[in-house]
Image (tube, rainbow, N blue to C red; front, side, top):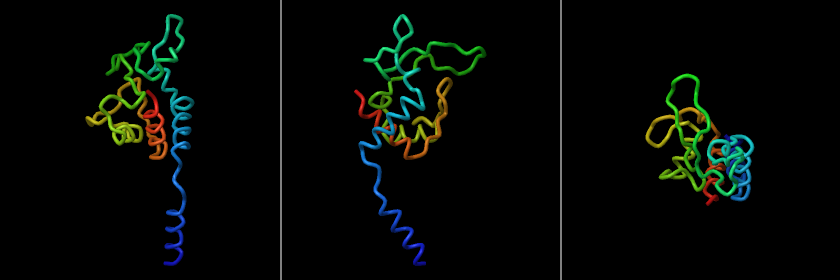
Length: 129
């Protein structure tokens, strides 16, 4: 009983990640792991990402070989996806389920981020204009 109580108190005593840490971690996930800009950022005529429009949505630059439900436009995610709350965005990132109950369609991967990682991504996306 005492050990369980002590373990519970130690877990509560651990500081939560600071906003700055969550922001950096979210940026790392978005830019280095998820590579979100590859689809959610427009490209110029030479195929280079248009940096000032980063994560503002873009046409998908490829087509599947076989018929499938396919999104032709990657939505804006800077500032959070349109009409999505932070909670809905975190849920999507951790379950793949959109607010309307449907799941991500190709080419969007069905991410299954941990709660901490999902909220770090939400923190980062909210910080973008």
